[in-house]
Image (cartoon, rainbow, N blue to C red; front, top):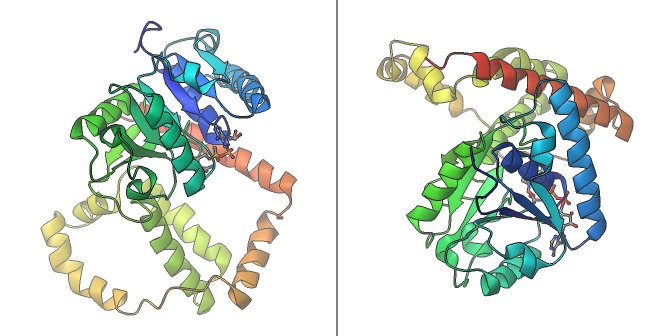
Length: 319
Ligand code: NAI
């Protein structure tokens, strides 16, 4: 665990994702400075983090070995970017998903940082070659894409710019591990990174199956939540192949031809509009009406499930 004497982490943008990062870094014992252009956002973030940490502590789900009060004492707000950057060893950008805004902020930070700090973006889908183009400190830049809610879903995709120094990726990888996250290295940038490419492949075939009338929207979701998804919480598709035969070679030998036959029947990219979107929307609303209260309640339920799953995963021997 880091000591409070270690250099602080700076979070730029204290919205949903900035707050989660602040909690995660504090759980690892790091001092955290929260910066935002809106002073009110910083005030709200600090209050929100206090409330969340207390609740997590009460339910026994607070991360790290420090108490909620100890972790809270590590987080402070800062409304001056120059002061905020002072002494920081890692800067995690969390402003809205807008290329021009992010480029402006990185250009500003590029002008005031030294050579030892890492500049990391939380972007969900902007490519590093677009975000960091022309920066003097490009070797120190990368994307560290978290998954919402990062406190319960530990994956972080590390995506370098072609000119990012390998040491920048290594240092960020080690930092993510220190705060209990599960980093993966995306070896070269690709639109959608890895997680969203997998997610879109699943959504795409789910949509086509519903559109063609092969399965109802609610049964389609059950195939994942009561079928594939249960395995995938513990192992990925490649290890699943390995276990579902006598190893990977045997799986490909046995099932390669049938996989290719089925894959050839996949249709074109769906439009995600028209009659199918109406049909899927209606089906989803039967379970969760699309008003703010019902959606918020269901999201809360999902967070509770993820919290329990995270506890279970931490108790399972990894073998
Ligand atoms: P948000 O809208 O909740 O928060 C953005 C914050 O940035 C606000 O507090 C805003 O005041 C602040 N801000 C705006 N301009 C600023 C500036 N010039 N300097 C400093 N602060 C500024 O956004 P959210 O959801 O936290 O997303 C942040 C980033 O994280 C985005 O790039 C998003 O794509 C990414 N992300 C979001 C996920 C999600 O599910 N919300 C999941 C993974 C990544």
